[in-house]
Image (cartoon, rainbow, N blue to C red; front, side, top):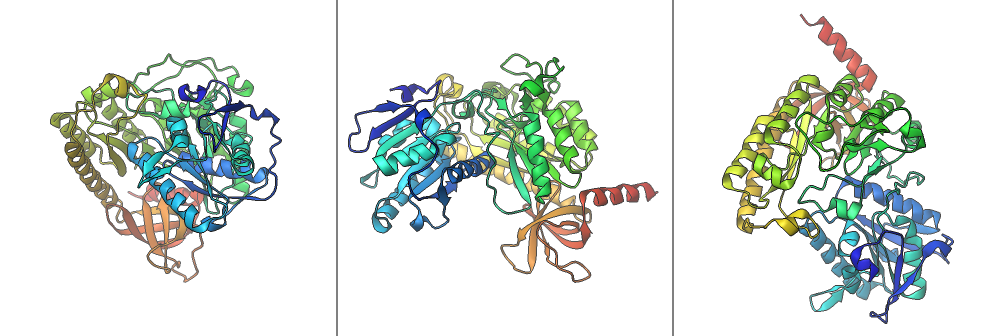
Length: 531
């Protein structure tokens, strides 16, 4: 079956539900993009920010095809699960959710609810999701599957299963698809995701992302800036630029190639598994243009690779008040020998030199990170090196997970997952404790300072308090009224005095309504007046 080996060109795989051994191949090019009759769908997203952005793209595509999104599962004809495959636990969570949906189907739905698995898990497991597996004495399976580059085919996939009883799969990985022409349907709020590139070329030995998301390709710079202007006019106060390797952005479209024919400049001491790329608009061009659209709109970005943070990028971040001074530097390990097996392209020493350089260029920078506990052949000495790196850097916050071996990766084929599960669990807990202690130190350093917070929502714990995030990305909780008793609004920028903290949250007193331009102008003036 073509689907078993992945597809280089788009192929739609369909088969009758009642005849699981027969596969019918057809091309979707004849599909007119409109559904026959009213269809409703329910959508859940799992995993990274990119998946939540993809959910907004999928929603837009389905709405244009005549589908209606519902928030009540009992009113849906189809349930869509937009999934993650980065760890085995993420996939197990989706299998359990599918089992629940099947039991929900038996008790609530007539006709039965159809289930579509979207995203990385679909690309990873392919027809195994259609064939299903036994869970609690019954077979749990998807009705159709759709990879990250196949969302334009969702209307046909749903129509095929709903109208003709045909299971289907759209699993082609594209070298061009960026969904640049699709306007996402975003949730109401002051922040917005904006996908700028897709895929990853880094080929870290533990990571399945290149196999389920494909090669790197970037949206044209002009399309991104046009969308940023629209978001600014709609009142959006913060935009998160997204990509699997966002700071490897490179616009090679006709407008992007321009006169720039220079090769990449990596951070000193960092290497890649591929040849240096040449030409196009780079991440620094994107960050420059994006931060120039609206000086009162924050710009964040995720998820980057440390290798692409050269000094020019760091200086630009330092110069632009609306580019958040939060740098995500995924270390994964503090041991050079482990980093070499991971194929990360740097040593412990090169990573720490980058950290020191970033701290010297960007005042008050908040550095965050990711770590893996118990990678192949990790020793206790390797683990202690990771703990010491966390202590040295003093991360604002970080994420850590026990190592999960993924098929297709170099680690699966060339290395041995030889760290016992109980040892992984212990090391994972020790990393979490170290990161909590690091976060607490960082947050305590902010007590007494004044920070600019973007108000995001009412606090979950009290209707009389609000929640927002400061420039560093740390959550802050504060009263919902200014000193003059006027009420603070969602999407306000608030000058916030930080009074206390935990390792996870800041608590503060709102001083006044502000803006990025006003806040940093006043901060500079105050600094100039200090003796």
